[in-house]
Image (tube, rainbow, N blue to C red; front, top):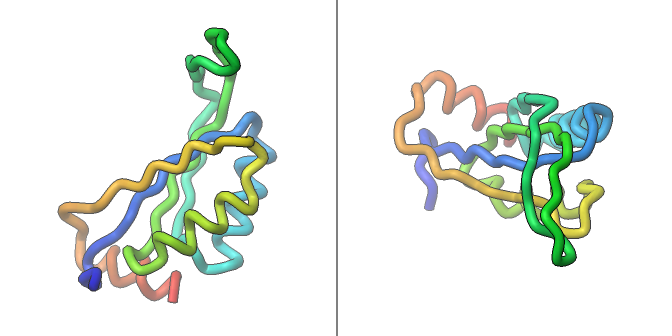
Length: 108
């Protein structure tokens, strides 16, 4: 069972700022995330369909409670415009207790 001070940070990317804002808003409204930061544009380099690609993207940094991890993944799969979205979840190792409490309150 996750501890109250454990958080998850999820990284994903989308093609444009409006997609990023739409996903951020939905995650907050559904209380599956406490905070979503949007970076961009960034430049992503990757291989797809046998070719090397380079595209501008926007990165979402999503903070949620450890107990919301599976719900967050499900929600991102539902909302995400990509066929194979990047959903990378990082486990916290040191979180300020007040911040952790706020995140847990926002996602419960």
